[in-house]
Image (spheres, rainbow over the protein chains, first blue to last red):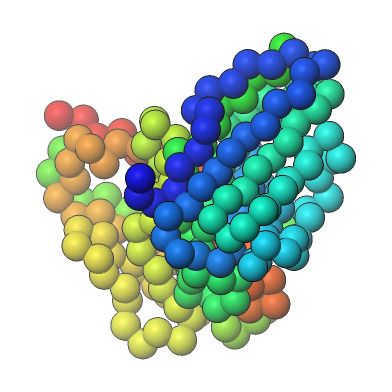
Length: 115
Length: 115
């Protein structure tokens, strides 16, 4: 595996379900990110982890719960979601969170549909 | 206030022609970084090119170049000799040092290359 991988690629869940999104980066990076991409809206940063420590929570509802067990893996635990949470969830990584020239590398995303 | 503005929701270009995608930004910080990403229908965000605010020359990367006009706060992406595979969404993004981990994205431009 190379780059940033995400599983599953597609997920359909009911509002009472609990599911998790997984992200793995094979780039030796130290910072990882979750973004939400809704239709007709710019990408929204949700969470940032740097060296496994959460450094940013962009006012995300508690029904989204991130977990970063190590610098290579990032999870997004989902519970009691709403239909408006349906979106493409993108994971990204970068060398670290500092430096304005550190580009972020993105995974292919998980297309989530909440019924 | 919106920090990144992409005024072209959609662009249609004939194959092999050059195309310019517009991006204007707003910041009071003298130090910042500007990025362009491509998002094909598969969903993955692909990094294309980077321009630092202090870079003396416009960035170039193969067929991609950035027309950086600092006084106008614009960072337009130029794609030369367009190809059918260039059809995708294109996003302009900015990173500022105080929020060094945060990429702020524009709304995007959908580029369609016609044969």
